[in-house]
Image (tube, rainbow, N blue to C red; front, side, top):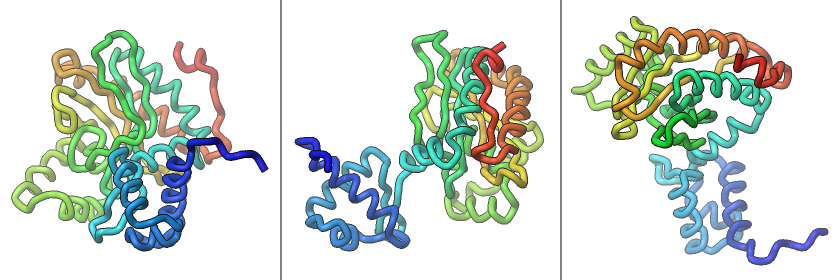
Length: 263
């Protein structure tokens, strides 16, 4: 048996909490997590607060705990579709080169859109910095509303009822109808002040039920509404390419070399 690395006790306790959280029933309490890991309540609470700060753990509405958005992002990037995201990465990189802005792929998780893959253009030092695992509401921002606009009507209404005040629901439904009519969603500072974005949902297929969207975002002074609308046709072309890619079963994706996708 290999010797444990000295000074790693705190990290190991945090990992044990994450493992216990993943193996527990829905929304375990602090008492349950402390008991299942053998940690004191004070130690478990302190570690959970740190994991919450870093978005690896979230508090549930019931008061218990659940895995957070960064865990969802890491899992989506690694299992079971590592080959899928590896194949999509050169496509995003090519789009980032063309647009000279940051390109991100988002996957729905409940009422959130999780950033699972990104490519940043190196053309400008001032650019949108993407963080894998970042969670944004489906009801706000280009990436989220692009997904929400294409969801089943009953599902969409349920999401809106859970997250939007009654007085604001009609306005959101109108915006979503406009997204469906135009074929793309645009946002200006909705999730990040000063950052504009344009996004399109990637159609789901029988082989791929995942709800995803691809977005291009950048500083508003440069990535203006006019530029976003002008670039929308190129974004549609990439969405069509990703849709074909996503039809392939995980584990059977053809990985292409970068020179094949960046020409």
